[in-house]
Image (cartoon, rainbow over all chains, first blue to last red; front, side):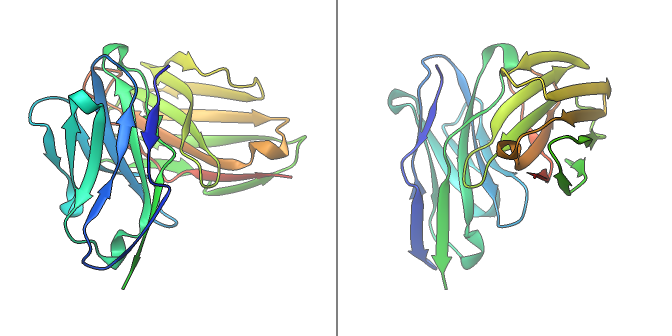
Amino acid sequence: AQSVSQHNHHVILSEAASLELGCNYSYGGTVNLFWYVQYPGQHLQLLLKYFSGDPLVKGIKGFEAEFIKSKFSFNLRKPSVQWSDTAEYFCAAARREAGTALIFGKGTTLSVSS
Amino acid sequence: DTEVTQTPKHLVMGMTNKKSLKCEQHMGHRAMYWYKQKAKKPPELMFVYSYEKLSINESVPSRFSPECPNSSLLNLHLHALQPEDSALYLCASSRERGQEETQYFGPGTRLLVL
């Protein structure tokens, strides 16, 4: 069965620190990959997505992610976090064929102190 | 515009009540989804509709009954729920259930079953 693993449950950083959140998926076929963010009290918002092509994708708010097929990974990065980045981050995957729905990782809580 | 709206925002119901959650999108999307999200957990897929027809039911108990009366509207009818059904219910939509599709989420309905 398809699954998505996020290695970090809770990450605590100071402002201006660099961020990398790990995500691995367990499916050998072609997948679509996503990072969603859920700010406190707000709904899920799409940060970025990967379907095909350039494995380095850039999203909103300075986030980027790199798809490494050989490692089944899709890690999220940001060079310098801000207090406003405090949120829950979810990695998600969907099998390309038949447009199956999203499988989410357990999420990573990011807390940024000013 | 990538807006999915959900009503009500909050709902409290007893175990013998019947209530409905409503989801609406006017983006012309033909695929719509219901997810359930417990506190500090990732969203879990419940149902998928494609072109107003139920495509996926993830073994959801019959006390949850989805309905898609038209391409813009998705309902979730609730009857005889249990306290453990208390959660945030999220609706999402995508253009289609295709190979390169992005799901856009609504703000959710926070349900409390007493």
